[in-house]
Length: 381
Image 1 (tube, rainbow, N blue to C red):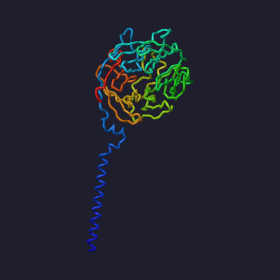
Image 2: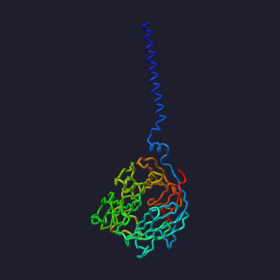
Image 3: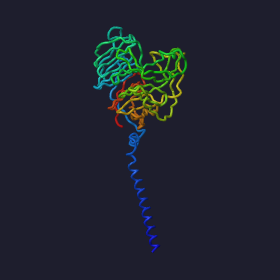
Image 4: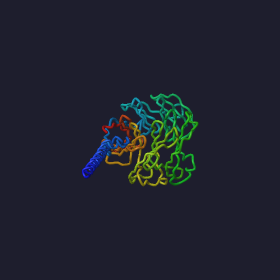
């Protein structure tokens, strides 16, 4: 009787052990099945997409100069308006083209009278008015979206490398070398670009923060040694200002860097000389800066559909590798952006990509060296 009881107890224990093992196995299966649902959103996005895939661009239109009244030198600061017209600055003029590529206006006139200036240097747009800033003479000229002159006002002389209208405020960035002791030094230095909130009459500036940028300085000349881009998004400004992989997310309300977007990157040996050739303002031989050791890890950034696209220095054939981050700084994707074979070299800096997948790039013809603006659309991806 005693042996039978022991046997029954032993059988019961085995059943419980088997049930326990089965339960663990069942929980393990559930964990595997539901693991994807428990991943953070940025990791799920990585799982869904094939990194390194190719996204094809298709040419839609080409904006060209006429070789006479309009000659492109270095078009930059691209903007697309709500009616899909396109404006950009190319010293000494601001141009607007309609959606079909027809010139709408060219402003301002050259001179020293009303609606005229000798040296315009930037523009910004508040949704209704286009503001064109001038160094000589120092003033701001206001135009409607059709290029009709409204009025102008004198302002203190200053040079900003960025101007934007963000949350009903004028935000500007100024290179401070000209206003500091650095201008008398020689060698490599990190110098500040200061971010300001500017009053409408440009007579008051409230410092927000300093952005360190590396320069080579010699005999009161200086050359930036880093990538350089500033892109607004809501009450933030994304700042690309380093040679190595880093994009800072600046909170304009708090005046602080809220996050830095980084990822490991294999640096690429540079083929660049110390400065880019400029037939209009060539660098004297005795002032040529040292050559670069490496390419800048990233050349440009764009906000596209609430994600940040980083144009990297990695290229393959007619393609450029783009990294994608969410707005919290999580890496979520990368892909190669492939241009059509159209005998053009594409300058990635100062490009523009809209949420609808329309892209504008400054192109240089491989045979003639002539500049034009290519309008493309993303075919897939």
